[in-house]
Amino acid sequence: MNVYKFGGASVKDAEGVKNLFKIINTQRENLIIVVSAMGKMTDALEVLCNSYFGKTGNIAEVFQRIQDFHQQIIRDLFGSADSEVNARVEALYQELDTILKSDPSLCYDYEYDRIICFGELLSTTIIAAYLEKQGRKAKFTDIRKCLITDQNYRNACVDIELSAQLCRKTFNFQDTFMYITQGFIAGTTTNQTTTLGREGSDYTAALLANLLDAEDVTIWKDVPGIMNADPKIYENTEIISKLSYKEAIELSNCGAKVIHPKTIKPLQNKGIPLFVRSFLYPESHGSVIRELDEKLKLPPIYINKGDQLLLTLSPRDFSFIAEEKLSRIFATLAKYRLRLNLMQNSAITFSFCIDYNEAIFESFIDELHDEYEVLYNKNVRLLTIRHYNEDIIQQLTSHKNVLVEQRSRLTARFVVADN
Ligand SMILES: Nc1ncnc2c1ncn2[C@@H]1O[C@H](COP(=O)(O)OP(=O)(O)O)[C@@H](O)[C@H]1O
Ligand SMILES: N[C@@H](CC(=O)OP(=O)(O)O)C(=O)O
Image (cartoon, rainbow, N blue to C red; front, side, top):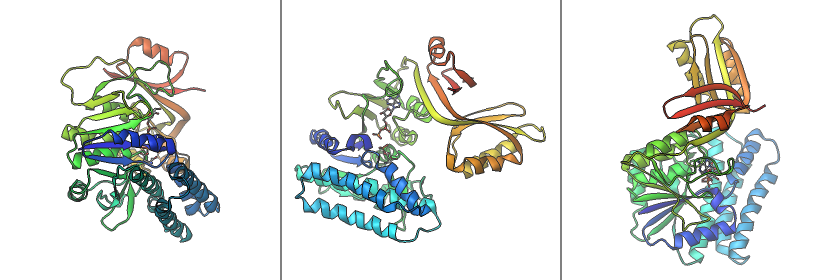
């Protein structure tokens, strides 16, 4: 059995859906198709959720834009005559409308998950109907019934044992050899919707592959494979055709957007290969991530993580930054769900980089202020160079304002202020 994952970029319009059909149509093995929301629909649903929760009043307008986007794709795929797909999609709009007309609870994260899931529910409903129309029926499966998580809304943690049982029952391949299901979303034992963290559909594909012992996973992207840098930012990038799991974990963890960081572990645990291939050139092999015996000679790989906040804390009482202080700083980071992207300490300072988040910036700093003098730089970027050499460091950092620098045997990291 294989798992294919199609992200938002691959199904951003009717042409994308037709292309998905062409790709899966060549497949002869048992297959699970995992799909994300179409195009930028998760961003649009976030705006809708914020309007609903903050009662800002333009709910109807945003909701209409979301419906118009999907209706255009439906018209392009089915013409105006297909009433069945329209009925299914209309039922989803109704369900969402009912939520939007009720008063929100006090829990933003709960409201977020029950609204944001409609991106994936709409995309899989439309694509399932299109595949059926083309004569390649894929069984529509609501992942929320079998991928079970705790109630940590927006960043839920999967109950592996229960999900394994339920997923094996659901994806049993007895009456079909193809399923279509949603990435990113999941459910609780009490039928609440949860999500696995933004861009978590790659992770869903890896989880399903692990739970069902898939042969391999392919994620279809708008790039030829894993490149030595983001081809949308840098020129003259080259494809890396083979990578070890360990290397892939390091890259995604440093911010290489091409794979979600949580994706690799479930695959590594079962030795399942991950292919990253281009949906634009499906005949090309792309990249494969797997257990590798040989030591690969890799070119310098560089990752640019923008919109970072660099903070430097110095205790007001001039005491040392020791374990107790660090553990309190970590607890504050965990409270705000902030992930450390880089850290460095001296006797009386602790510096770290996190993703900048306007919504919590002030209260986070306020919380640290009593105990520390807090200095910060907004709008910096974190540049990571794996397998570095002096030439590439020179090329990427010369004439730049480097605020922090760290080097280990394989990795060099720089916090850079561009202005
Ligand atoms: N090293 C890299 N190799 C390839 N793509 C990369 C790399 N680093 C960042 N990217 C970016 O990742 C994007 C694909 O990931 P993403 O947009 O999350 O896909 P999707 O949402 O379709 O799953 C590419 O368009 C590219 O800009
Ligand atoms: N739609 C979700 C999940 C996801 O993984 O999407 P994509 O595969 O398009 O990155 C998001 O945008 O966060």
